[in-house]
Amino acid sequence: MNIILFTNLHGRPGSLNLSRPRIYVPLLSLGLFLAASLFYLGFQLGQVQDGPGLAAGPQWRLEVAEQQRAVAQARQESQAHLDALAMRLGQLQGQVLRLEGLGQRLVEMADIDQGEFDFEQIPPQGGPAAEATAGYAVPDFIEELDTLSRVLDDREQQLLALESVVRTRTLKQQGVPTGRPVTSGWMSSAYGKRTDPFTGKQAWHDGVDFAGKAGTEVVAVAAGVVTWSGSRYGYGNLVEINHGNGYVTRYGHNRDLVVEVGQHVKPGQAIARMGSSGRSTGPHVHFEVLKHGKSVDPARFVWAKRS
Image (cartoon, rainbow, N blue to C red):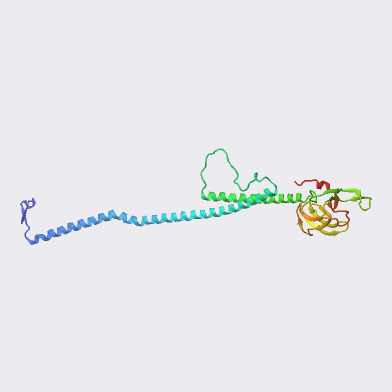
């Protein structure tokens, strides 16, 4: 096969015979060179296009790992805040329960209407609508709980002090002789000068007498401590009670004594049973009131009413 080539070179045409073997070697070399050049060029283009993507792979993994660490830290902080809130809430609940119990005791001690101070109910609140503000952040909320806890501690101390005042006032009131020393009977002899039933002469009577049926209960007219329970000359079987604040009461001529020395008694508590022991003409109780060691007329205490 002949290929005729026209060229201006040397001013004449030339020809190429493809049937000769030596012609294939240059052509094959040229083809391989072109193929290798194309392959190399494609490889370089691929490197340029794929290079940034391959380099971005590790960076993407680092960003994902950083986000995962941030999420884990946020979860840990949230759990810590929840634990702190739960602890503070438990402490506040305990304080509120103590305050409710203390308030209830004060209501009972002060004899206040239960409906006026009901510590078992949430205090009523109200008012016109106002513009709402933003809610609390968790740290701010914990700070508010701490502030409320300090306020509750302060209120508890104030209530404890008030309880002490009320208790002291109540004890003082209970320690003042008030009322009759018997559950039934009548006043048979007054305080002051009278005719002595044994001598018929004028004599001073340091107390009042209440006559009644033998065995009638004799009761304490105030709270106090028994300082005498036994026989004493002229009084027969005597009970003496020290009420504090300078007050002492005596109950004489009893048949039986039902309290002992050192025993604490309450107002209205039975301390003896009426009899006629000692210097007596019949069943009655001799009732005396002493103020700072001096006898006073029991009548003003007998007719008084306890507040």
